[in-house]
Figure 1 (cartoon, helix red, strand yellow):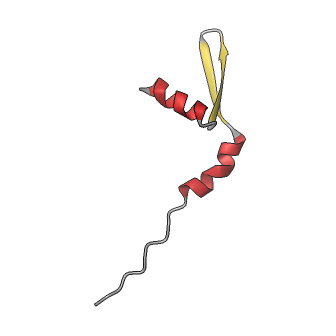
Figure 2: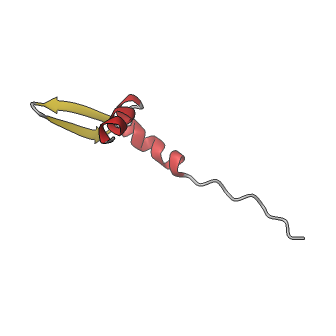
Figure 3: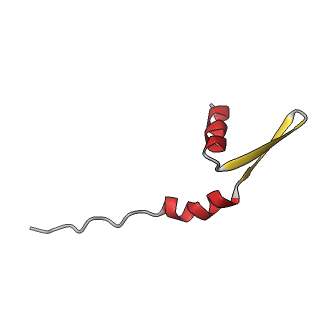
Length: 51
């Protein structure tokens, strides 16, 4: 399951990777970090009306 998530993150260009022998190293790509605040913003709740 973890390898599937890593694949999705690589395809979405959120992480980069490099194989060194039997090890694979992963890192977060800078453009993904720049987009992160916009992705994490929570929308304002709709104004509620009291009856």
